[in-house]
Length: 503
Image (cartoon, rainbow, N blue to C red; front, top):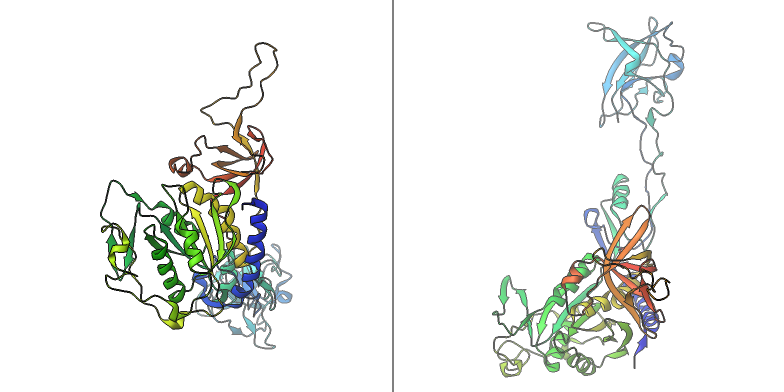
C-alpha cells in the first residue's frame, strides 16, 4: 500500500535518526586538507591564544611610548635604531636607556614581533609610522631618525589573543566542516581532526537492457556496443550526485534482470563490504520493478514502504537488509560468477566479477538501508532527491533541509493567456504551468535564477520521466504539495537545488 509523501518522510526521519547514533560513534582522523565537507565528531576549541605575540601591523619604529610621547613637528625627537626585525624573526632584546637625548628604537616590518626591554623584560609598546620619520644620520654610530609625531599605542599592532583566545569554540560538534573552519583550525595549529565516519553508499542497476562499464583489477571491461541495449545513466548519475553531497558513492555496475543473480551479488557485497545504504534501480524500459522486491524477500529484508504518493518517483521501496555472516556468502562457481554462465542470459552481457573480500571486514550489528527506485532517469532522480537525500542527512546528523521560496515565472518563449475575454471583457484565468494533484505531491524540474528582487524559477515545459535533455538544462526542483491545483506565473513555490547542500 502506498504511503503519503509526508508519511514516507516521517518514516525516513525516524529510522535515519535512530541509526545516526551508531554512525556518530564511529570516527576517522582526517587531515585538514581533506576535512572540508566532513562532519565534526566533537566540538573543537582553540588550544592557544592567537596571535601568540604582539606584532606590528605597519612598517615603522617600535619605541617605549612613554619615552617618545612628546614628539611634535615643532619639537621632534631623535631615535637611535638598535636593529631591524621582520615577520618570522625572533624579538630582539635591546637596551632601553636614553643616551645623549636619543631614544632607543627598533625598525619593525609588518608582522614582526616587538622588541623586549633589557631592563625589565617587557615589550616595547608604541610604534611611530615610517612616514612620520626622517633619517638624519647613517654610518659609524648607527642610524639616527627624527620623529615628528608621537607613537601609536593601539591599532598599530595585533595583540596577543585578539583573534582566538584559549578555549574559544572554533567548531561545534556535528557541524559540516567548511573551508572557513579549515582556515581557523590551521591558524591555531591543528593538522588533523576527528570526523564522523563517512557514509558509504553502493549503487547498482538492474536490467538486461543496460550497457555498463566497470574497472576491476586495473583493467577496463566494456560490454560490446549493441543497438538494442541502452546506457546505464542512473548508476553514473546517482554515484556522482552522492559524491557531490560529500558521500562515498560507489558504482557497483549493472546486473541482468534475474533476482537470483542480484541476490547473490548483493549478499556477497553485504559480507565483504561495509555499506550504510544500497541503492538499486530497475525498469528503465519496462517501467516496472520485478526483481528488486524478490531480492529483498530472498535476503529476508524488512520493508518499511514500497510506494510513495509522489510524482515522479512513486515506485520507491525502502527496506532494511540484515547483517550477513561471512559463511552465508555464496562461493563463486565455474565461469567466474555466482552460477553457470547459462543463467546470465545473453552471452555478451557484462556482469561484475566477484571481488575477493576478507571476513574481517564484516561490521557486527550493521543493518544497511536498501532503496529500490524505478529506472526511468527523472523518476529515480526525484526519488533520490526527496526520499534518499533526507535519509542521508538524518543518518549523518545534519539538520533537515529547508526549501527556498521563489516566484514561478513564465518561459520567455511562451506567453500568458491574460488577454481580455472577447465575450465578457474580463481577464482569462492564468495558465497553469505545472498541475498539482489532490492526493499526490508533485515535483517538477526547472531553472532557478536569483535577481535583486528575489528568486524566480522557470518550470521546464517537458517533464517526461525518461527524457534527460530538459533535466540537463535545469538546476532545481519545484515542489507542489498535495491538494494544490498547480502553479501559475507569479505563484510562490518551494524550490530545491538538484544537490542538497552539505550544511
